[in-house]
Structure formats: C-alpha cells, structure tokens
Length: 354
Image 1 (spheres, helix red, strand yellow):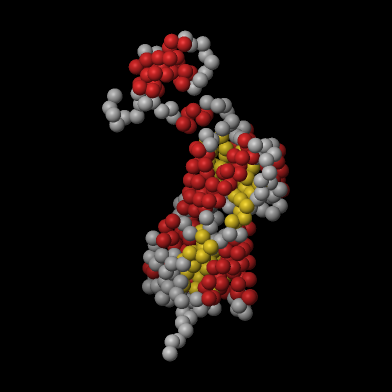
Image 2 (cartoon, helix red, strand yellow):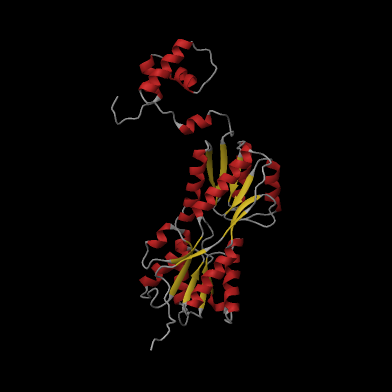
C-alpha cells in the first residue's frame, strides 16, 4: 500500500485474511461471536497499518438519530450562515455528533416540513434559525419532546433556550457612528422586511436619528421586494445592486447608507461603482454582520460585527449539554454588537487646528 494512501477497512480485512464485515464488528466492539484469536489478529493488523476508522460512520453506528442533531438555516449562500454552520459542525465533531443541515430558503412551509422530518428521524435535538416563528410552529417544537435551541433569529414568545443577538443595539450603533462622522441625511436600505431582526435594526436606526434631533425621512427608506428567497444564489447581493439603482434614481444622494447586511452593502457598492459613484467620496456605506469578505472588497466595508462563529459554537454547546444532561440549568444568551471601522465611511467633520 502506498505511504500516501489512507488505510481502509478493506486493507485491514485483506491483511487479516477475513471479511470487512468481521473487521467492522471487531473494531466497533460488537459482541458478535468471533474467536479471541481472530479479534487479536485484526486489532494488531489495524494498529500495524495505522488504520483510523471513519468518524461519521462510527457515530452513525450508535443508532438512528441517537448521535444526530438537526440544524435548520435559511441559507448558506450568505457567508454569515456558512460561518455559523462551520462552528456548529466543529462542536458536534468534538462531541461525536452528526449535524444534519436543512435549508428553509426563507419559507415557513419548508421550516415546518424540516422540523417534521427531523422529528420522524428521531434526532437528539434541533438548532433552529427560524424566519417565521408562530404559535403553530412553537407547538410543533414542544410536541417533539427533544431539546431545541433557537439561534440567530430568536423570539421573546419562545419559552425554550436561545442564543440571540441585540439587533436593535446594532442598528443604533451603526447609525450613531454615521452621525458621529458628520452625516445627517442617512438612508436605510434593505431587502424584504420579513423578519424581526431586520425590523429591530430599523428601529435602532430611527432611535439614533431621534436622539440626535434628525427627523426620519420616509423617502430615505429604501426597500427592494424583488427577492424573498434567502437560498437563491447571491440573492442578497442582487438586492443590494437593485437598492443601489433605487438610490441613484433619487433627486440627490444621501450622505450615507445603512445597509441591512454586508452582502446587501457589497451589492450596493458594486452598483454605485458601475455608475460612477464612489464610496466613501460621494456617499458613505455601512453594513451589518462582518462577514469575512467585507474586509476584501474595495473599499473595505465598515460594518457591525455579529459574531457568527461564536454564536454557532455557543448554540451547539447549549443544545448538546441539554441532550447529555437533561434538566441542567442553562441561561439564554444575548450577544452584543461591536463596530468594525474600515474605509467605506467618510468622516466629514474635522476640527480646525490653529
């Protein structure tokens, strides 16, 4: 066998002169009747060949659903959700669980169907980023009688465990920063306002205007309803591009734009650049999420950080603890926003030096 090729169960079986089924039974610790001599031989061959069993296959041997959890997300096209899922998977692998990923595509019907399917599969628990929580869905989760943790999108009405984020403070922080940089005419740009987290960002935006004596101008609320499919390829980017077009149709540009998330902001940056409008020289743009590519676009995007990796890790730990220690005391978590300053916001206020 080549030194670079990973040893398989077939190699062990061939070297031990037995079947792969027998090798699998011996290495998994099965009580299937096999002679002590053969057991010893197979174990020695596996050690000599440095055989490492497939972790996922080993976990699945424990029984249907016993070491599996369901993860329901609206999309993984947006890098924010990819980071969230990556953290969940890391935590699951460390604790020998298999995550089953289900994408709802921002559809309440698919959310309900996925939860139903995961219940039938008898998974040990569910992590859920739900866009359309209502009483019927909460009742369905209760009837599953397994631990469930909401993350990213959380709801005050939900009585169970959740790892959330203060979207209102995020909206407040973003808008305050734009005002501190000297901007007064600030637009709010978003795709469909179909989830509570977006509405909370908008409320934070309006609160920051009020506290600084700036009147909310409804003409500066830019909403693009063209794409409601969170799973469609680059949908948020396309939303941002169309929002950029809407911005350009106005009589004059605002000082700054608060985009609902980084993908939307990046789509807007591209549209503005294509049409000869430059950020931040002509208009400042701030995003939300702090996805990894926000540091690599031009100009690098100033944004509000929503720590997706830490959120995924905390939610996965909370769920696995609830599975392994039923009834253990756990507190809900609300993560706080932080500002990440880059180059897409222009500071127009300068103190004159004498």
